[in-house]
Length: 549
Image 1: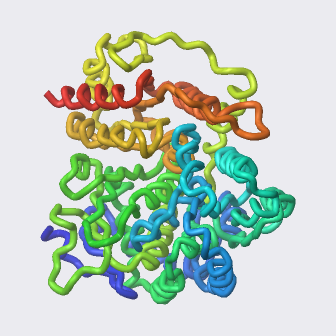
Image 2: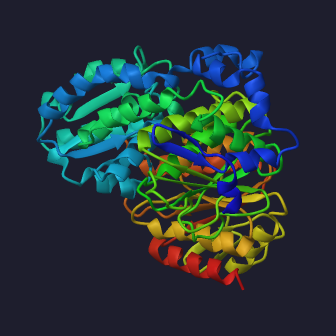
C-alpha cells in the first residue's frame, strides 16, 4: 500500500488513479516520459490515427470517435425521453446483444440499481426463461453494429415468434422492439421490414468502445437510468485527456503498458466495494480484445472481491476499481493493489478506453481490430452445416463425461490437478462454460477454487459471451493458455425460428468450434460435459476443492 500512495495520484473530474508512478518506475526507463516526449497524450486526444503504426492507420482513422462521442450522444437525449415515455407500460427491458453491445449497459444498470435482463447466450434454458418472463410487458432492445451476429439474430427471431404466438399482430409485436445499429447496416434493413423503431449508433466507434453511444445509453435509459449524468461525467474527464499531468487515462495506460512490457502481462480487475458493480466484465473485453493479438497482449483476470484468490502474482498487475472515495479513505478495498482507480462511472468508461489505447501504443498493437474473432464463428457455421465430429468420452465419473487429452489421469480430481500442474510459470487457465448463466450460476465458483489450487491466473467466462471478449486474446495473444470447457446436457431444446437449427444445436456448435480453434494451436483443452447439470456442477466444485490438498 505504501507504493500505491508513494507517487502522485492523477486526478480529474472526480476520478483518481493511484499507484501508476511506482509501476512506471519499475520499468528500465519511464514509459510515461517516453510517451510525453512523443506528444502522445495530446495526439490521442486529437484523434491522431498514426499512433499505432502505418498498418493500423486506416482502421484507427474510423475508430477514434469514442474520444468525444459523449458530446454527439447528447443529440439522443430528446429521442430517448420521448421513447421512454411512449413505452412506459413496457417495464421489462431485455437487451439482446453480444460483447460491446451488452457489457456496458449491464454495468450501468447494475451500478445504478436499475433492472435490465441481458440476453447474451445461446443456452436454450436461459433463452426460454427470458421468453417466459413478463412477455406482454417486455421491450426487446436488439443491439448489433452489423446485425450479422448469430446470437442476437436468433434472439430477435425467438422474441418475434413469441409475441406472435401470444396473439399479437405484427404491428403490435413491432411496438415491443427497439433496434440499435449503425446506419446502413443489414440490421437497419431488417428493422425497416419489421416496422420497429431504429436508433442509430455512432459509426466512428467500435463495439467495445461504445459504452457512451446508443449501444450503452438506449437500454440504460429504457431501464430508468438518467443517462445524461454519464455523459456529463465523461465530458468533465475529457478535458484532461490532452494533458501530460493530471491525466488519469494516461496514468492508467502507462501502468498497464509498463507492467506488460516488464513481465506483468496479466491484470487482475478487482472491485473494491465502493459502488461500481461489474466494471471488470466490461474492462475485460476492452483490454483483451484490444491488446490480445500478434502473440502479444494483456490478459484481464476478473476477480470477485479483494479477498478472492488470484488477485496477485509474480506476473500480475493488481488493479482495484470503484466509486469516489470518502476523504481520508485508503484505496483498494482492503487488499494491497498496485493501482487503484476510483471515480464516477461515466469517467471510468472514458478513462479505461483511453488507457487501453495508450497500452496499445506501448505494446505496438492495433487496439481497434480483432483479427482472430471470426475463426470460431467460421468453425461454428461449418459444424452447423455438416454436423459435429463424433466424440467418445475418455471416462465418465458420476454426472460428468470427461474428454481429456492423451496422458491425462482417469479420475476427475486428478485430471483437474493435471491441467493445473501443466500451467508452468507463465501460463493461465481459462474456464469457459457453455451453460445457463443463471440456472447454472454455481459453476462460476470454479474460478476461485482453481486459482487457489493453481497459484496462477484463472479466468472464467460464460459461452458464447466470452467469444466476443477474451476469445480474441485466447487465439491472438501469447499462446500460454490452458482451457477447461464446460458443456451441459439439453433436456428442453428451443428452435430458432426460420433457421434449420435449435438453440441447443447452436450452443453445441459454438463450443465445438471454439475447441477446434484452440486445439489447432496445440493448447491443452479439457472438456467436461455435465449429463445432469445441477449434480454435475456440485460434483465439479467438490473435485476442484480437492485439487487444493
